[in-house]
Image (tube, rainbow, N blue to C red; front, side, top):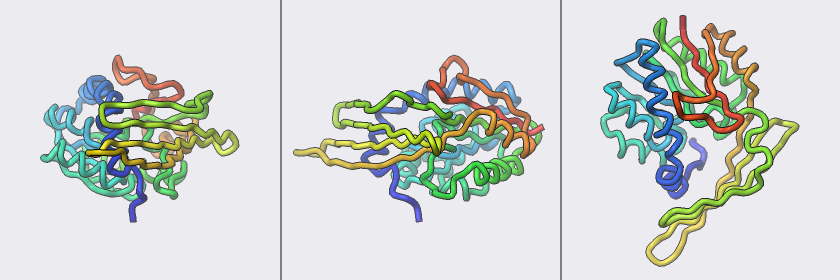
Length: 242
């Protein structure tokens, strides 16, 4: 049973209005793969969303396997990258096949769509990735840290046929961030309203680094993918199997 997250309208809005991160990050990410000697083979994208990054990976000549917990996102990804293989599943349960690299971009590991998500379950998922990688393979992802969106109360964005309102709730004691997202999408003669709550468990850099080292990775952190900076209070991890 998959939670009702990134419903059709929000998935559409995220795809058309919030795809800059995936597109902007792509050149730097492809360069990271290239520098690791990864120029062919299978790349697994956890939390693939609507397939923007998967499209870039496929264009670069890789075989792509994408995983997402949202049926609407998977539908969009299959339309964008028809030659790729997509799975409707939580990244916490997915068993990656042998691959050259795994990515999880846009704070994927923070989201509590799967209520089993925790540092311990995340470690188990990273161990499954480790076991699927060859020596020299890499896991690349970013996480939101405590303080993410601190000071923000609300945000508003609109496009030609949609409006997106976000209300931020901060739970400092549990180090969680909740985004209440209300969308309006235009139909022929009216607007359809939809609402979702997205809860993120925030992780500090040292905890994630230690967790990855305990699995066996060699770890370095980044604050940008190439020339594309990560948002404030978001840290990237390049975890290599050596």
